[in-house]
Image 1 (spheres, rainbow, N blue to C red):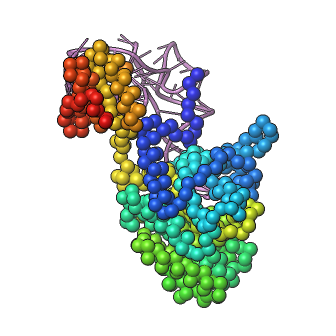
Image 2 (image 1 turned 90 degrees about the vertical axis):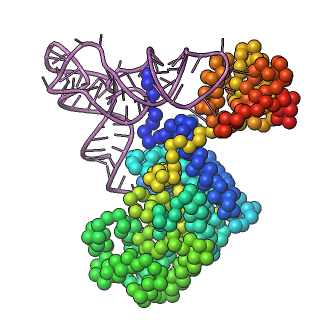
Image 3 (image 1 turned 135 degrees about the horizontal axis):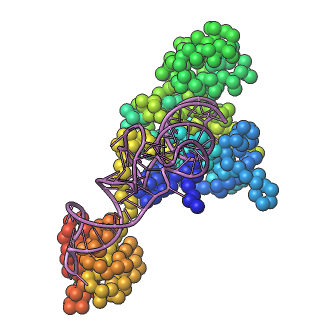
Length: 426
RNA sequence: GUGGAUGUAGCUCAGUUGGUUAGAGCACUAGAUUGUGGAUCUAGGGGUCGGGGGUUCGAGUCCCCUCUUCCACCCCA
């Protein structure tokens, strides 16, 4: 029976693995440049852990199962709950601030479509224990530092920034009752994804005051934090939240990434989990789903039974990123699969034993080394050396017996030289 | 979960109103080439035409079901 790969999964043959490593290695390097330390958790957790934050409807969207001990478990669809659990467990001994990153493999039981699969990798960076908005800014900066390192520019991607805190304060300011906020957030989040009329219609279902709707529409179109005060009279909470967000943009400017960023009140983010600054990074054209998203979540640790500790972070998936990089020509299919230091070619079967000894010696010296199992023609072995991406090819031939010498050939230049076997690798 | 499109070799695709033994390019393997790689030439392997059922003397081709992949919706942590 022929077994197929499972819906929404990918097989990473060496060329695909090279692409994955290219992306993941970049993520790790950027994390380290920005002072983050790596962590990881288990790939499955108690199902209950994901229900705490997202409710029962989440169960249908993740892979869950019961183990032989009757435990209800789920393959992780995100790593933030695991992070919260891990930090809570050792909150009293961990030095703060906690700046951690991870590149977990995640699974979600959703229907696959462009930029979304059932199994993927997601880069996460989080800062726990810093209340200052500088931490939020650092998370944004770190994401941009990575994207810039790939060759993307502020013409290719845009960071859309808003604040949950500001949004809540402004809505209350224009007479929206507190208990309406939760229903309004998902609607506002749709602003840029649906036609204007449909958006207004959805607002009308929830809000009676036409004045309030007009104000919301004006707010949604603003592109600068400085214009907010001109649309709404600010109460103390709104003023404070606005000052905080202005501070975010000031820091971004200091760090030299202000031209990548803009204020956009339609960035709300799905769940009620965020408490402060929120952001998404999109392709400039706006044709793909978000490359990256994140924000401040000050209540999550306490929601998971820990003390009240502030946190901010972001996640970036590999699927949309790969599509964008290909579109921009920053990812080619001929990415080098793997390099090899030495390939040993054996000129004549009678030299094979010496060749085998040499291979072991090279590997012991810490170099990568490969060879052909068949002592066919030398030309054939050179072909293999080439296919293996070898930097150098060592030919073991008559010279070894005649004068104890090896032929070392540089595969890139084609130059070759005779080297004393005793001095080789010394 | 809903809707639309799709499926022929590892990949990209031909395949006439239904008609003999289903083809090409690339890739792969071997040879030309037992002391020199990327090129060239020659040969070869590789297919239950996604799977199952039906119509027909006869199905890659027509019909039904199912699966996959892609796209959109729902959702997006």
